[in-house]
Amino acid sequence: MEIKDTDTNQWKEWRQGMTGYIMYEATGYMSLHLVPRDYPNTDLEFKNFTMDMPEEQLKYITQNYNYTGSYTIDQTKQIVSHTKLSHSNPNEWNELSERRFHFVNDTLFVRPVEEKNSGLRLKFLKMP
Image (cartoon, rainbow, N blue to C red; front, side, top):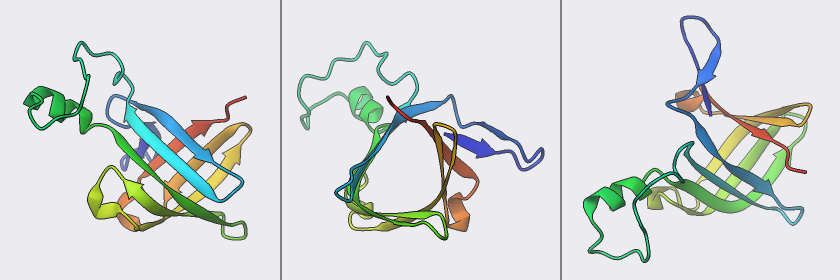
């Protein structure tokens, strides 16, 4: 994930870096999963998610951002629309997100259409 520096107009890494996956199925479904780059590197142990988990563990798992849903593509406008069937944030269930997209070689760039988040972009490399 990158953010546009308003002073230099250049893209730079957002926070300490993110990693994750975006997958599109030919059947019209998609999935997105994002976490901080170092998310898997923790000494915390998560055997089961329960209400009595320590606060430190609960805070840690809130860094996990994901949703799954259906999608449509408008090739003319180069916009992909995600209808979120489920989401790590319950307030975004069934919400529609529109993202501008373009490719540079094997890299997919996805950027929110809405002005509020238009300074962010996701960059995904194609998996073999």
